[in-house]
Length: 252
Image (cartoon, helix red, strand yellow):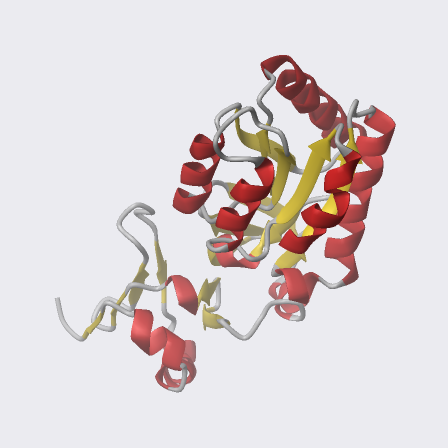
């Protein structure tokens, strides 16, 4: 899912932008959602600092506040280098300045749905051009795209694959062989029915052959005897994993 955040000092314009975007999501059958919007730039900054799953950000430039949209973008780039930033403004003199903040697009106001749709499709095209560079994967034949960083593990359930992520569970008809072709090296087969994202692991119990994640997830997946040695060898050689791991428990 692509997560959108919107900021404009005018609540009427903000509401209209939300409705236009949602109609575009529906029109193109795309798995996207507006997860936060505000007229207060400080609220936007706090939200993005606390949530690493924001993918697209719409910013008005003149926010009638001590913090302009440009100031906000500068602060956001310190905590999120990858988010797509789209500026909206009636002041075209800001165009050149706006692109200093790794800006994806600048949409003049008043915003039309045609212009908004054009930008949305360009974002999708940019993601689809190189999934690996954006850490996104397409999991089905529809427009369901997931950020790999959000995945805890993938479970095989009959003819389906079930993706357990930070914010929801996705199901699709597919196979491990297909999905393994597009996953990054931080995904390891740990069981005949599980592929785990080693960057999400917090604890491993070799006694129970189970893997635990952060306390907020309350999820576990399991290690199969056929895959244990290979998986532990991968983990041993992964420095990032070693630094992030809380513990490996050999007994309970």
